[in-house]
Each structure stands twice: as C-alpha cells, then as structure tokens.
Image 1 (cartoon, one colour):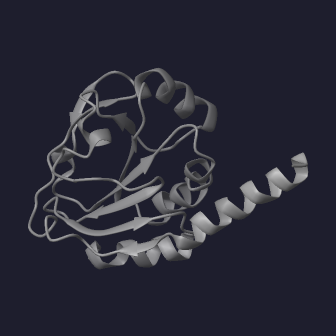
Image 2 (image 1 turned 120 degrees about the vertical axis):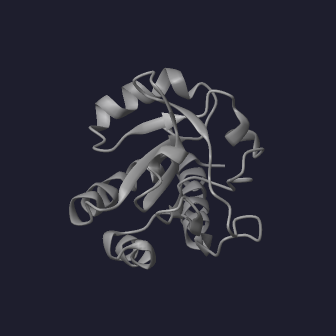
Image 3 (image 1 turned 90 degrees about the vertical axis):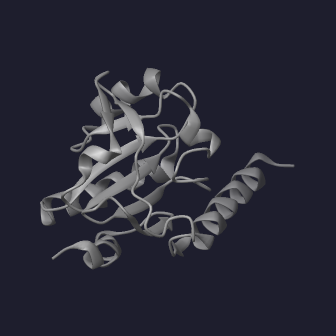
Length: 169
C-alpha cells in the first residue's frame, strides 16, 4: 500500500476518533462521590485532588505523547485566564509519566500544575474516578470535589467555557 494512503487512513481514523468524542454525563458511581486521588506533581511534590476542594476544578487527563492532548493546551490556557475562579490540574495518564511530565511542562510552557498517579491505579481504572476511556478527558468538579461532568475529546474555548459554567457562581 502506498505511504500516502496509509497517511490518509491514519488522518481519517484520527478525525473519526475525534468526531466520536463528546460529552458524557457523570456515571452512577460519580453521583455524590468526593474525589480523593493521591498524585505527584511534575516537580516531585506529593498532592491530592482533595486539596482542590473549596473551589470548582477542572481535571484534564492527558498523555504527553498525544497530539490531541497537546492541542487542548491552548484553549485550556485561555480558559484559565478567562476563569481565574476555576482551578485547573493536568494529570498524565500514561506509564512512566514521572519521566516525561517535567519535560512536557517545560517544553510547552503549561500554565497550570501537572501531576501523575505514582501508584498507577488511575491508569488501571481502579480509583474512585473509574476508567478513563481516552485522552484528552475533562472531569469537572464542583467546590465540594464531586464530579459533575465528563467529556472526552478536544474542546475549543467557547465549548470549554460552557462546560464549566454549571459549577461557577
């Protein structure tokens, strides 16, 4: 098969994957679930999603090697400037994230904290968040730390702004 057909097929597959992405409502397990998830920041400092309680937060699940995750950084940065009352936290969902996350944060000048799950439980789908089906994935938490919405795929600024409005006052 000619290389250009392989490339065209890969592009169509990617577009199809992105087109299939969309909003997902919280699962039954999400209802009234206060998220607690021990993480490690790219800097090496321990943290926990529970520390975000008190203000609404957007968790951005990413993979450092994923082009769609990289594309999503622009509207997320714009959202952070537009909605300072919203906390953002990027969480790398990949093996060996501790090796790649500091380089990723530095190379792409990511303006919000980045973390990973050193236990690997998030990657295995065995945390209170359950399985994360794909990246990029957005999880919207209210001020109490309860998941209010999920979205898989890339969103532009207007869609992101609409996505987070339900938890903003």
